[in-house]
Image (tube, rainbow, N blue to C red; front, side):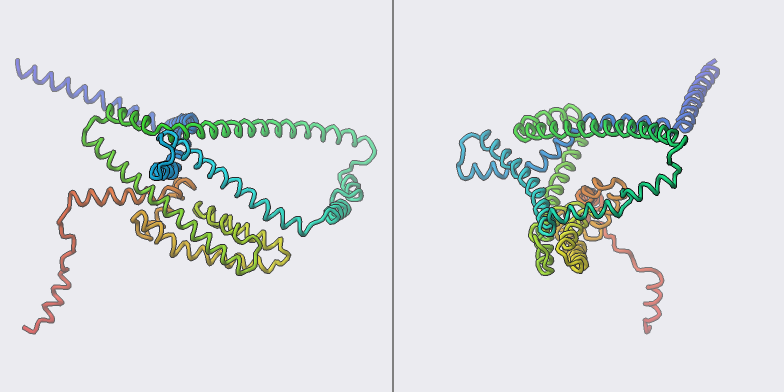
Length: 410
């Protein structure tokens, strides 16, 4: 009797496993059949979620980047005993930091306007502009003769077909205007949404900087609720501390590199004889913070200034000079300055930038180096914990041993 009961239990257990396996297999096949649909839905949900929290993400990034200057200013005012209240010192630091950012942006745009606009105004007069417009109208497809020839080639002469052609043209024009207006309104809606997100991020970053201790307290409480004081929570905190230090050092290294590029570009353009060499050099240093694309912006701006100077040969010298600056920066400065700040070898620095760019575009290139440096430190610490004192030197191969034996005179 007991054997029958055991047999029934085993049979029931087998049937349960069989049914569960069949259900899981069926669901897996259905998922594979509809994988594009599920991936599309997940991508859509993820994109919607990112759009909803985009102001918060932008505010967090802005607050993180500006907290160096804000708290540096706060400590400076405190050490010199300027303003008694901590809140006042922090508010002054926030105001100075944001005014500095706005001043840099305005100076950047104004400098480009003065360079290009001033160069054009020196070489262009109203009489030249009017003469150019008249010459263009007389010799282009907008001249009366050209319009008449185009009409004749299309058969648009006086006759019965003229009204048909005009009606068709008006219908096409109506469709084109409708599509253009729809695209314009969509673009305006997108621009308005981005502006709202930008303003929201601006105010969020101010509150995050102003009430840092309050928000850090909320974060610590939430972190404790999730992880308590377990090993997982401690490991995550340790990794976050490493990432914070690495990103801070990387930002300092990038700023140092930008200053060096600005100085080298200014010297090169001054030797070539380009107007506003200092301003172009500063812009080249700032845009150099953008991997791959940034250096070409400074080169293009310098080439435009050389072209407007009336000496086209200078364009060639500008391209050569800026390429020399970029080669020095890419092969000497960037791996050594940035790599030394984050503790990453030059080879791994370049590999990280390439991998980040191929996987996540511009954003990936910007954060690739500090992310790689953080991984390197975490892996090194894990290795030291588990394999400390282990001799990893490979033993002599049998071939080498046989060679030694063959050379032994005995």
